[in-house]
Length: 142
Image (cartoon, rainbow, N blue to C red):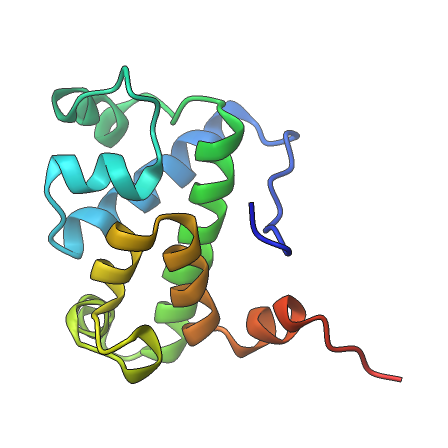
């Protein structure tokens, strides 16, 4: 786990969990990930198969697994940061996710997340959200 974890409060309602699930699945689909890649990015349990993803697009929230919940929170941070970075053109988020970036070792964010797991997801979130990167650095205002 990373040094700074996102809010993974267990006090969310089933409706909120379902909305989060749909929001993440919509973004992963928009970014062009395959079923197998979605399983990797979400860090779903090995018992999950790509054919099971349809239920998450419809009416089933992600499993209440600590790793999945944390990964979903990071992904929601990325989705929100893309929305605020490109408020007038939501399709730019998908484009940004597919373009190579120097601070990601000249890899696109999707590649970094797939190859580096949670570390890659955190690196992408840090690249997009300077406030998160600041918190992650341990910097403090005196």
